[in-house]
Length: 193
Picture 1 (spheres, rainbow, N blue to C red):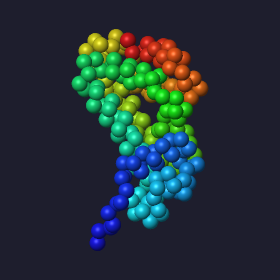
Picture 2 (cartoon, one colour; picture 1 turned 45 degrees about the vertical axis):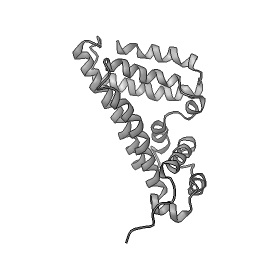
Picture 3 (tube, rainbow, N blue to C red; picture 1 turned 180 degrees about the vertical axis):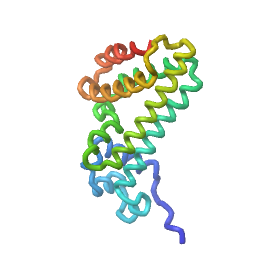
Picture 4 (tube, rainbow, N blue to C red; picture 1 turned 30 degrees about the vertical axis):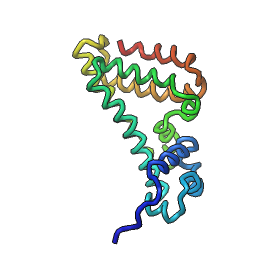
């Protein structure tokens, strides 16, 4: 027997859940907070999402898939993939103040859940590793084509970029001004020449 059809816009309620989790974190967001923000009753919530943990996993997947698809989709067709990676980092400075204040969704998740929700933390780690793998691949390609002159190990450079990403997502909370962020980003991007 099929369940009742959803009478809500799943995209909209997932956007609301994402915003709440991103702003407050997993543990500080209660089921009541989610129900209120999403405009759902308990039975609709459980029917559609199962549990808070399952909803969070869905939000993580959706969040990372959106971000990764943009970058992964751009890199193979960009005439200079390393320049696209540089642009990816430069875009951090140009995001709005409210996004600066929230930092990186996956990084926040790892920091928050390392000691309490290891399974969710591990999923967040895997998602950031996908970004690191993209960096590693295109660094290697750019070294072979001559676009990138450095002979540094692509694995080390990719991990450096991941470290840079994590650090910038904290720094932008401290210095949310694009004029303050741009020179920091450019200085760190010197490894990609």
